[in-house]
Length: 475
Image (cartoon, rainbow, N blue to C red):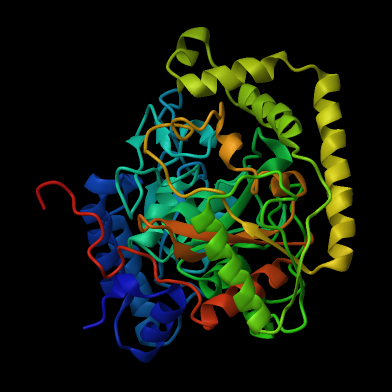
Protein backbone atom coordinates (compact mmCIF):
# COMPACT_ATOMS: atom_id res chain seq x y z
CA UNK A 1 0.00 0.00 0.00
CA UNK A 2 1.25 3.49 -0.85
CA UNK A 3 2.57 5.52 2.08
CA UNK A 4 0.88 8.86 1.42
CA UNK A 5 3.44 10.72 3.51
CA UNK A 6 6.09 9.82 0.91
CA UNK A 7 4.25 11.49 -1.96
CA UNK A 8 4.76 14.95 -3.35
CA UNK A 9 1.88 17.37 -3.81
CA UNK A 10 1.93 16.70 -7.54
CA UNK A 11 1.62 12.96 -6.88
CA UNK A 12 -1.18 13.47 -4.35
CA UNK A 13 -3.16 15.56 -6.81
CA UNK A 14 -2.71 12.94 -9.50
CA UNK A 15 -3.96 10.28 -7.06
CA UNK A 16 -7.01 12.36 -6.17
CA UNK A 17 -7.74 12.84 -9.86
CA UNK A 18 -7.54 9.09 -10.49
CA UNK A 19 -9.53 8.21 -7.38
CA UNK A 20 -6.68 6.12 -5.95
CA UNK A 21 -6.85 7.83 -2.54
CA UNK A 22 -8.52 10.85 -1.01
CA UNK A 23 -7.67 14.16 0.67
CA UNK A 24 -9.00 12.74 3.93
CA UNK A 25 -6.59 9.82 3.77
CA UNK A 26 -3.66 12.11 2.91
CA UNK A 27 -4.52 14.59 5.65
CA UNK A 28 -4.99 11.89 8.27
CA UNK A 29 -1.62 10.40 7.30
CA UNK A 30 0.07 13.80 7.57
CA UNK A 31 -1.49 14.51 10.96
CA UNK A 32 -0.56 11.09 12.31
CA UNK A 33 3.00 11.56 11.11
CA UNK A 34 3.13 15.03 12.67
CA UNK A 35 1.95 13.68 16.02
CA UNK A 36 4.49 10.85 15.86
CA UNK A 37 7.50 13.04 15.08
CA UNK A 38 6.63 15.91 17.40
CA UNK A 39 8.21 14.45 20.56
CA UNK A 40 11.49 13.85 18.73
CA UNK A 41 11.91 16.96 16.58
CA UNK A 42 9.45 19.57 17.93
CA UNK A 43 8.47 20.88 14.50
CA UNK A 44 5.04 22.26 15.45
CA UNK A 45 3.63 24.87 17.77
CA UNK A 46 0.09 23.80 16.88
CA UNK A 47 -1.71 21.06 14.95
CA UNK A 48 -5.19 21.71 13.59
CA UNK A 49 -6.58 18.16 13.95
CA UNK A 50 -10.33 18.02 13.28
CA UNK A 51 -10.30 21.39 11.53
CA UNK A 52 -7.90 19.98 8.95
CA UNK A 53 -9.93 16.79 8.55
CA UNK A 54 -13.12 18.83 8.06
CA UNK A 55 -11.39 20.81 5.29
CA UNK A 56 -10.13 17.55 3.77
CA UNK A 57 -13.67 16.11 3.76
CA UNK A 58 -14.93 19.13 1.86
CA UNK A 59 -12.06 18.73 -0.61
CA UNK A 60 -12.89 15.04 -1.01
CA UNK A 61 -16.50 15.88 -1.85
CA UNK A 62 -15.32 18.34 -4.51
CA UNK A 63 -13.01 15.75 -6.06
CA UNK A 64 -15.83 13.18 -6.10
CA UNK A 65 -17.94 15.70 -8.03
CA UNK A 66 -15.01 16.35 -10.37
CA UNK A 67 -14.93 19.99 -9.27
CA UNK A 68 -11.74 20.73 -7.31
CA UNK A 69 -11.74 24.34 -6.15
CA UNK A 70 -8.13 25.13 -7.01
CA UNK A 71 -4.70 23.86 -7.88
CA UNK A 72 -3.96 22.45 -4.41
CA UNK A 73 -7.35 21.15 -3.37
CA UNK A 74 -6.92 18.70 -0.51
CA UNK A 75 -3.11 18.91 -0.25
CA UNK A 76 -1.75 19.10 3.33
CA UNK A 77 0.35 22.18 4.01
CA UNK A 78 2.04 23.76 7.03
CA UNK A 79 2.57 27.44 7.83
CA UNK A 80 5.49 28.94 9.74
CA UNK A 81 4.29 30.71 12.87
CA UNK A 82 5.52 34.05 11.56
CA UNK A 83 2.68 34.24 9.01
CA UNK A 84 -0.93 35.02 9.91
CA UNK A 85 -3.39 32.15 9.63
CA UNK A 86 -7.04 32.89 10.24
CA UNK A 87 -8.48 31.42 13.42
CA UNK A 88 -5.11 30.62 15.03
CA UNK A 89 -2.67 32.74 17.05
CA UNK A 90 0.56 33.78 15.37
CA UNK A 91 2.94 34.02 18.31
CA UNK A 92 6.21 34.36 16.36
CA UNK A 93 8.06 32.20 18.86
CA UNK A 94 7.65 34.83 21.57
CA UNK A 95 6.08 34.99 25.00
CA UNK A 96 5.75 38.73 24.38
CA UNK A 97 2.95 38.15 21.84
CA UNK A 98 -0.48 37.72 23.38
CA UNK A 99 -2.45 34.72 22.10
CA UNK A 100 -5.70 36.65 22.57
CA UNK A 101 -7.53 37.33 19.34
CA UNK A 102 -9.17 38.07 17.22
CA UNK A 103 -6.97 36.27 14.69
CA UNK A 104 -9.27 36.93 11.76
CA UNK A 105 -6.92 37.49 8.83
CA UNK A 106 -4.69 35.38 6.60
CA UNK A 107 -1.31 36.53 5.32
CA UNK A 108 -1.43 36.89 1.51
CA UNK A 109 0.38 33.59 0.87
CA UNK A 110 -1.90 31.77 3.32
CA UNK A 111 -4.97 33.34 1.73
CA UNK A 112 -3.90 32.14 -1.74
CA UNK A 113 -3.34 28.60 -0.44
CA UNK A 114 -6.77 28.65 1.19
CA UNK A 115 -8.41 29.85 -2.02
CA UNK A 116 -6.82 26.92 -3.86
CA UNK A 117 -8.12 24.36 -1.39
CA UNK A 118 -4.95 23.54 0.56
CA UNK A 119 -5.53 21.86 3.91
CA UNK A 120 -3.67 23.48 6.82
CA UNK A 121 -2.43 20.79 9.21
CA UNK A 122 -0.49 23.03 11.58
CA UNK A 123 1.82 25.94 12.33
CA UNK A 124 5.54 25.29 12.54
CA UNK A 125 8.21 26.50 14.91
CA UNK A 126 10.42 29.56 14.58
CA UNK A 127 13.02 31.28 16.74
CA UNK A 128 11.70 34.43 18.37
CA UNK A 129 10.56 36.78 15.58
CA UNK A 130 12.60 34.67 13.14
CA UNK A 131 15.80 36.46 14.14
CA UNK A 132 18.46 33.74 13.73
CA UNK A 133 19.59 30.79 11.62
CA UNK A 134 18.60 28.05 14.07
CA UNK A 135 15.19 27.24 15.54
CA UNK A 136 14.81 27.50 19.28
CA UNK A 137 12.79 29.96 21.29
CA UNK A 138 11.73 30.75 24.86
CA UNK A 139 8.17 29.91 23.82
CA UNK A 140 8.46 26.55 22.07
CA UNK A 141 11.92 25.19 22.88
CA UNK A 142 14.38 23.53 20.49
CA UNK A 143 13.53 22.14 17.05
CA UNK A 144 15.73 19.22 16.07
CA UNK A 145 17.11 17.70 12.91
CA UNK A 146 15.21 14.78 11.29
CA UNK A 147 18.49 12.98 10.57
CA UNK A 148 19.89 13.31 14.09
CA UNK A 149 17.77 14.86 16.87
CA UNK A 150 20.93 15.91 18.70
CA UNK A 151 21.57 18.36 15.84
CA UNK A 152 19.81 21.57 14.84
CA UNK A 153 17.22 21.68 12.08
CA UNK A 154 18.56 25.11 11.13
CA UNK A 155 16.37 28.18 10.98
CA UNK A 156 14.54 30.23 11.12
CA UNK A 157 12.05 28.01 9.23
CA UNK A 158 13.34 24.93 11.04
CA UNK A 159 9.97 23.47 11.93
CA UNK A 160 8.81 23.77 8.33
CA UNK A 161 11.89 21.95 7.01
CA UNK A 162 11.65 19.16 9.56
CA UNK A 163 7.93 18.69 8.84
CA UNK A 164 8.51 18.31 5.10
CA UNK A 165 11.51 16.01 5.58
CA UNK A 166 9.52 13.67 7.81
CA UNK A 167 6.33 13.58 5.75
CA UNK A 168 4.04 15.79 7.85
CA UNK A 169 2.72 17.45 4.69
CA UNK A 170 4.52 17.86 1.35
CA UNK A 171 4.23 21.66 1.28
CA UNK A 172 5.34 24.27 3.80
CA UNK A 173 5.44 28.05 3.87
CA UNK A 174 8.64 29.55 5.26
CA UNK A 175 10.18 32.99 5.47
CA UNK A 176 13.73 33.98 4.54
CA UNK A 177 15.45 37.19 5.67
CA UNK A 178 19.06 36.00 5.54
CA UNK A 179 18.76 32.34 4.58
CA UNK A 180 15.86 31.22 6.77
CA UNK A 181 14.30 29.00 4.09
CA UNK A 182 17.57 27.77 2.58
CA UNK A 183 19.48 27.09 5.82
CA UNK A 184 17.00 24.61 7.34
CA UNK A 185 16.13 23.10 3.97
CA UNK A 186 19.84 22.36 3.48
CA UNK A 187 20.30 20.96 6.98
CA UNK A 188 17.17 18.79 6.70
CA UNK A 189 17.65 17.60 3.11
CA UNK A 190 14.63 19.19 1.40
CA UNK A 191 14.07 21.79 -1.30
CA UNK A 192 13.74 25.45 -0.35
CA UNK A 193 13.23 28.51 -2.54
CA UNK A 194 13.66 32.18 -1.66
CA UNK A 195 11.86 33.83 -4.57
CA UNK A 196 12.68 37.24 -5.97
CA UNK A 197 11.66 39.85 -3.40
CA UNK A 198 8.02 40.82 -3.90
CA UNK A 199 7.07 37.73 -5.91
CA UNK A 200 5.21 36.43 -2.84
CA UNK A 201 3.39 39.31 -1.11
CA UNK A 202 3.92 39.79 2.62
CA UNK A 203 1.52 41.33 5.12
CA UNK A 204 1.91 42.62 7.74
CA UNK A 205 5.11 44.20 6.49
CA UNK A 206 8.23 42.78 8.09
CA UNK A 207 10.25 44.98 10.43
CA UNK A 208 13.26 43.56 8.60
CA UNK A 209 12.02 45.40 5.52
CA UNK A 210 12.91 44.24 2.04
CA UNK A 211 15.31 41.59 3.33
CA UNK A 212 12.30 39.43 4.21
CA UNK A 213 10.95 36.97 1.64
CA UNK A 214 8.25 34.28 1.79
CA UNK A 215 8.97 31.02 0.02
CA UNK A 216 8.01 27.37 -0.47
CA UNK A 217 9.70 24.44 1.26
CA UNK A 218 8.88 21.16 -0.44
CA UNK A 219 9.87 17.61 -1.34
CA UNK A 220 11.12 18.71 -4.78
CA UNK A 221 11.31 21.57 -7.28
CA UNK A 222 8.10 20.64 -9.10
CA UNK A 223 6.10 21.07 -5.90
CA UNK A 224 7.79 24.41 -5.26
CA UNK A 225 6.93 25.62 -8.76
CA UNK A 226 3.30 24.62 -8.26
CA UNK A 227 3.22 26.33 -4.88
CA UNK A 228 4.82 29.50 -6.30
CA UNK A 229 2.21 29.58 -9.07
CA UNK A 230 -0.40 29.76 -6.31
CA UNK A 231 1.19 32.11 -3.75
CA UNK A 232 3.15 34.31 -6.18
CA UNK A 233 0.25 36.57 -7.11
CA UNK A 234 -0.29 40.22 -6.15
CA UNK A 235 -2.07 41.30 -2.97
CA UNK A 236 -3.23 44.87 -2.40
CA UNK A 237 -2.00 44.82 1.20
CA UNK A 238 1.66 44.70 0.09
CA UNK A 239 2.62 47.88 -1.76
CA UNK A 240 6.03 46.39 -2.65
CA UNK A 241 4.65 43.22 -4.25
CA UNK A 242 5.44 42.49 -7.87
CA UNK A 243 2.79 42.33 -10.57
CA UNK A 244 1.52 39.04 -12.00
CA UNK A 245 4.18 36.48 -12.88
CA UNK A 246 5.15 36.40 -16.57
CA UNK A 247 4.03 32.78 -16.88
CA UNK A 248 3.57 29.49 -15.09
CA UNK A 249 6.58 28.31 -13.13
CA UNK A 250 5.32 24.74 -13.39
CA UNK A 251 5.23 24.95 -17.17
CA UNK A 252 8.75 26.44 -17.23
CA UNK A 253 10.27 23.37 -15.55
CA UNK A 254 10.61 21.45 -18.79
CA UNK A 255 13.20 23.86 -20.15
CA UNK A 256 16.13 22.01 -18.59
CA UNK A 257 19.64 23.42 -18.31
CA UNK A 258 21.05 22.77 -21.77
CA UNK A 259 22.84 25.92 -22.91
CA UNK A 260 22.60 27.72 -19.55
CA UNK A 261 25.73 29.62 -18.55
CA UNK A 262 26.62 28.50 -15.02
CA UNK A 263 29.23 30.09 -12.77
CA UNK A 264 30.46 27.76 -10.04
CA UNK A 265 31.92 29.57 -7.03
CA UNK A 266 33.04 27.00 -4.44
CA UNK A 267 34.30 29.51 -1.85
CA UNK A 268 33.21 32.99 -3.05
CA UNK A 269 36.75 33.68 -4.17
CA UNK A 270 38.47 32.13 -1.18
CA UNK A 271 36.38 34.03 1.37
CA UNK A 272 34.70 30.93 2.84
CA UNK A 273 36.26 27.81 4.37
CA UNK A 274 34.11 24.89 3.21
CA UNK A 275 34.21 21.44 4.75
CA UNK A 276 35.64 18.83 2.37
CA UNK A 277 32.51 16.65 2.36
CA UNK A 278 30.39 19.66 1.46
CA UNK A 279 32.78 20.77 -1.27
CA UNK A 280 32.86 17.26 -2.80
CA UNK A 281 29.07 16.83 -2.86
CA UNK A 282 28.46 20.28 -4.34
CA UNK A 283 31.12 19.76 -6.99
CA UNK A 284 29.42 16.49 -8.01
CA UNK A 285 26.15 18.40 -8.37
CA UNK A 286 27.84 20.99 -10.56
CA UNK A 287 29.36 18.23 -12.70
CA UNK A 288 25.87 16.82 -13.13
CA UNK A 289 24.65 20.17 -14.45
CA UNK A 290 27.47 20.06 -17.00
CA UNK A 291 26.50 16.51 -18.00
CA UNK A 292 22.95 17.78 -18.55
CA UNK A 293 24.18 20.38 -21.02
CA UNK A 294 24.98 23.49 -19.00
CA UNK A 295 28.13 25.47 -19.79
CA UNK A 296 29.92 25.49 -16.44
CA UNK A 297 32.79 27.83 -15.58
CA UNK A 298 34.47 28.24 -12.22
CA UNK A 299 33.97 31.95 -11.57
CA UNK A 300 33.42 34.12 -8.50
CA UNK A 301 31.07 37.09 -8.17
CA UNK A 302 32.99 40.28 -7.53
CA UNK A 303 32.08 41.27 -3.98
CA UNK A 304 33.53 41.28 -0.49
CA UNK A 305 31.57 39.85 2.42
CA UNK A 306 28.74 42.35 3.11
CA UNK A 307 28.12 41.05 6.63
CA UNK A 308 28.54 44.38 8.41
CA UNK A 309 25.97 46.03 6.17
CA UNK A 310 23.66 43.08 6.66
CA UNK A 311 24.09 43.33 10.44
CA UNK A 312 23.21 47.03 10.37
CA UNK A 313 19.98 46.36 8.49
CA UNK A 314 19.10 43.12 10.32
CA UNK A 315 19.84 44.28 13.85
CA UNK A 316 17.99 47.55 13.21
CA UNK A 317 15.01 45.49 12.11
CA UNK A 318 15.21 43.41 15.28
CA UNK A 319 15.22 46.59 17.37
CA UNK A 320 12.15 47.80 15.52
CA UNK A 321 10.35 44.46 16.09
CA UNK A 322 10.46 44.82 19.87
CA UNK A 323 10.37 48.60 20.11
CA UNK A 324 6.80 48.53 21.41
CA UNK A 325 7.59 46.21 24.34
CA UNK A 326 7.88 47.45 27.91
CA UNK A 327 11.24 46.91 29.60
CA UNK A 328 9.92 44.06 31.72
CA UNK A 329 8.60 42.23 28.65
CA UNK A 330 11.96 42.59 26.93
CA UNK A 331 13.56 40.65 29.76
CA UNK A 332 11.65 37.57 28.58
CA UNK A 333 13.23 37.69 25.13
CA UNK A 334 15.84 35.25 23.82
CA UNK A 335 19.16 36.55 25.27
CA UNK A 336 20.77 36.59 21.83
CA UNK A 337 17.88 38.62 20.46
CA UNK A 338 18.28 41.11 23.30
CA UNK A 339 21.93 41.53 22.31
CA UNK A 340 21.23 42.25 18.65
CA UNK A 341 18.34 44.55 19.62
CA UNK A 342 20.81 46.53 21.72
CA UNK A 343 23.21 46.79 18.78
CA UNK A 344 20.44 47.71 16.37
CA UNK A 345 19.11 50.46 18.59
CA UNK A 346 22.50 52.20 18.56
CA UNK A 347 22.84 52.58 14.78
CA UNK A 348 22.31 56.07 13.42
CA UNK A 349 20.25 56.91 10.35
CA UNK A 350 23.48 57.69 8.50
CA UNK A 351 24.91 54.28 9.36
CA UNK A 352 21.70 52.64 8.16
CA UNK A 353 21.85 54.56 4.88
CA UNK A 354 25.51 53.64 4.45
CA UNK A 355 24.44 49.98 4.70
CA UNK A 356 21.80 50.64 2.06
CA UNK A 357 24.57 52.03 -0.17
CA UNK A 358 26.54 48.77 0.27
CA UNK A 359 23.41 46.85 -0.62
CA UNK A 360 22.82 48.88 -3.77
CA UNK A 361 26.41 48.42 -4.92
CA UNK A 362 26.17 44.68 -4.29
CA UNK A 363 22.99 44.59 -6.36
CA UNK A 364 24.73 46.44 -9.19
CA UNK A 365 27.63 44.00 -9.16
CA UNK A 366 25.35 40.97 -9.23
CA UNK A 367 23.29 42.52 -12.00
CA UNK A 368 26.41 42.84 -14.13
CA UNK A 369 27.52 39.33 -13.15
CA UNK A 370 24.28 37.87 -14.47
CA UNK A 371 24.80 39.53 -17.83
CA UNK A 372 27.52 36.91 -18.28
CA UNK A 373 25.99 34.00 -16.33
CA UNK A 374 22.45 32.68 -16.07
CA UNK A 375 23.13 30.91 -12.79
CA UNK A 376 25.53 31.15 -9.88
CA UNK A 377 26.12 27.88 -7.99
CA UNK A 378 27.62 27.74 -4.51
CA UNK A 379 27.32 25.49 -1.49
CA UNK A 380 24.22 26.50 0.45
CA UNK A 381 26.23 26.31 3.67
CA UNK A 382 29.90 25.54 4.32
CA UNK A 383 29.02 23.04 7.05
CA UNK A 384 26.39 20.45 7.96
CA UNK A 385 24.04 20.52 10.95
CA UNK A 386 25.67 21.07 14.34
CA UNK A 387 24.51 20.69 17.94
CA UNK A 388 20.90 21.68 18.63
CA UNK A 389 20.15 24.54 21.00
CA UNK A 390 23.07 26.85 20.18
CA UNK A 391 23.35 29.73 17.71
CA UNK A 392 26.82 28.85 16.41
CA UNK A 393 28.87 25.64 16.34
CA UNK A 394 30.94 25.19 19.47
CA UNK A 395 34.58 26.05 18.91
CA UNK A 396 33.86 27.83 15.62
CA UNK A 397 34.85 31.26 16.88
CA UNK A 398 31.71 32.75 15.37
CA UNK A 399 29.76 35.28 17.40
CA UNK A 400 26.48 35.32 15.47
CA UNK A 401 24.69 32.96 13.09
CA UNK A 402 25.87 34.99 10.10
CA UNK A 403 29.38 33.64 10.72
CA UNK A 404 28.43 30.22 9.31
CA UNK A 405 25.92 31.38 6.64
CA UNK A 406 28.10 33.45 4.26
CA UNK A 407 26.51 31.99 1.12
CA UNK A 408 22.91 32.92 1.97
CA UNK A 409 22.46 36.46 3.32
CA UNK A 410 24.17 38.29 0.40
CA UNK A 411 21.25 37.31 -1.83
CA UNK A 412 18.70 38.73 0.57
CA UNK A 413 20.53 42.02 0.20
CA UNK A 414 20.26 41.75 -3.59
CA UNK A 415 16.69 40.34 -3.56
CA UNK A 416 17.64 37.60 -6.05
CA UNK A 417 15.90 34.23 -6.29
CA UNK A 418 17.94 31.50 -4.63
CA UNK A 419 17.20 27.86 -3.88
CA UNK A 420 18.85 24.97 -2.11
CA UNK A 421 18.86 21.45 -3.55
CA UNK A 422 20.04 18.42 -1.51
CA UNK A 423 22.99 16.79 -3.26
CA UNK A 424 24.36 14.31 -0.77
CA UNK A 425 25.39 13.79 2.83
CA UNK A 426 28.53 13.82 4.96
CA UNK A 427 30.07 10.92 6.86
CA UNK A 428 27.49 11.33 9.64
CA UNK A 429 24.57 11.06 7.21
CA UNK A 430 23.78 14.79 7.47
CA UNK A 431 22.44 16.47 4.31
CA UNK A 432 24.42 18.82 2.10
CA UNK A 433 22.81 21.50 -0.03
CA UNK A 434 23.77 23.13 -3.33
CA UNK A 435 22.60 26.73 -3.84
CA UNK A 436 21.30 28.03 -7.18
CA UNK A 437 21.08 31.81 -7.65
CA UNK A 438 19.73 33.70 -10.67
CA UNK A 439 19.15 37.31 -11.65
CA UNK A 440 16.20 39.10 -10.12
CA UNK A 441 12.87 37.97 -11.61
CA UNK A 442 14.40 34.78 -13.03
CA UNK A 443 12.85 32.40 -10.54
CA UNK A 444 12.01 30.23 -13.53
CA UNK A 445 15.71 29.61 -14.23
CA UNK A 446 16.38 28.56 -10.63
CA UNK A 447 13.42 26.17 -10.66
CA UNK A 448 14.34 24.74 -14.07
CA UNK A 449 17.87 23.93 -12.97
CA UNK A 450 16.71 22.42 -9.68
CA UNK A 451 14.08 20.34 -11.46
CA UNK A 452 16.70 19.07 -13.90
CA UNK A 453 18.76 17.77 -10.97
CA UNK A 454 15.73 16.02 -9.50
CA UNK A 455 14.69 14.57 -12.87
CA UNK A 456 18.21 13.24 -13.40
CA UNK A 457 18.09 11.34 -10.11
CA UNK A 458 20.80 13.49 -8.56
CA UNK A 459 18.82 14.33 -5.42
CA UNK A 460 18.46 11.83 -2.55
CA UNK A 461 15.01 11.28 -1.01
CA UNK A 462 14.35 13.12 2.27
CA UNK A 463 15.51 10.91 5.13
CA UNK A 464 12.90 9.77 7.61
CA UNK A 465 10.10 9.61 5.05
CA UNK A 466 9.24 5.95 4.68
CA UNK A 467 12.35 5.06 6.67
CA UNK A 468 11.05 5.38 10.18
CA UNK A 469 12.70 8.68 11.01
CA UNK A 470 13.79 9.52 14.53
CA UNK A 471 11.98 7.49 17.15
CA UNK A 472 10.27 9.41 19.96
CA UNK A 473 10.94 8.20 23.49
CA UNK A 474 8.47 5.55 24.50
CA UNK A 475 7.25 4.77 21.00
